[in-house]
Image (cartoon, rainbow, N blue to C red; front, side):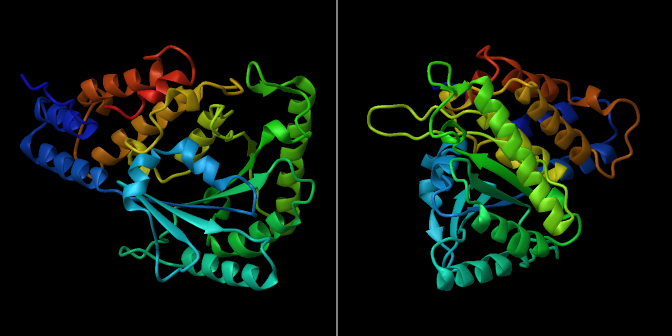
Amino acid sequence: MKEKSKQTIYENMVNDVESSNLDDTAKKKMFDNILELKDQEVNLMITGATGCGKSSTINALFDMEVAKVGVGVDPETMSISKFNLKNLVLWDSPGLGDGKEKDIKHSKKIIEKLNEIDNKGNSLIDLVLVILDGGSRDLGTSYELINKVIIPNLGENPGKRIIIAINQADVAMKGRYWDYDNNKPERKLAEFLEEKVKSVKLRVKEATGVDIEPIYYSAGYKDDDEDQRPYNLTKLLYFIVKNIPVEKRLAFVDTASKDEDMWKDDDEIIDYNKEIKKSFIESVKATASKGAEIGGDIGSIFGKTGETVGKVVGGVVGAIGGALSSLFRW
């Protein structure tokens, strides 16, 4: 007998609404909202100076077996590669640092893309992830990209549409003070990285007046002999999700990597899985009930959905990062 396919979160929501005590008008409105929620698309631009580790970051974060199907170069942007991962669109943009002529060309293409609008008249790009090379002492090119190209073209509240992430934390001090057995920085390196975060924040603030909260991580590097072993990747995903408009967050449902090894090692300052769960629940509650005349606790309507969200994020595998392998299998 063929095994019954697992229901999606959207099917769960429809079933929850159908079995609720809402009147037919409220149900219809919520059904319409769920359909709209399912169709929401996120456009994420990823950029950074040459050698910052964009490719390894994309490969660690997302299900690239899906991305390979839709990979292509947008003919209108020429230098910006476009990856289609279901409802998530990645714009992989070359940064600066390949020579003056190429820098001018890349800057122009980035600016054009940042000023592009969608069919609803909103900015096409929801969020820009700028990756810095944690092993480099000279970040001048990256500051040029952030301060003169990206932030001036993000419109109002630019701080909500950009994430600055310092990659290659494991080689920030030339490989010293990294605990390779436990895949995390030792105290001296952690202090160095925190100072780097503060320095980047200050430099951006002084140049643009915009407050940014950078983070550090390591995407790892996969070769024939060793696994990729990222660090703080769950934290990076948490920052991405929380900065995406609330109604669009479920676009990450089927796109994050299903390899649990990608999500095992984090700084454990907070439970990033739990925070991601909250972000998804906010999306479900805020968007599905929009415009409907519903009394009482909206959470009670999505009983099964809420339970499902809790299970996939809260500890199916047990480890803080391990549950992310099941995170998007509703």
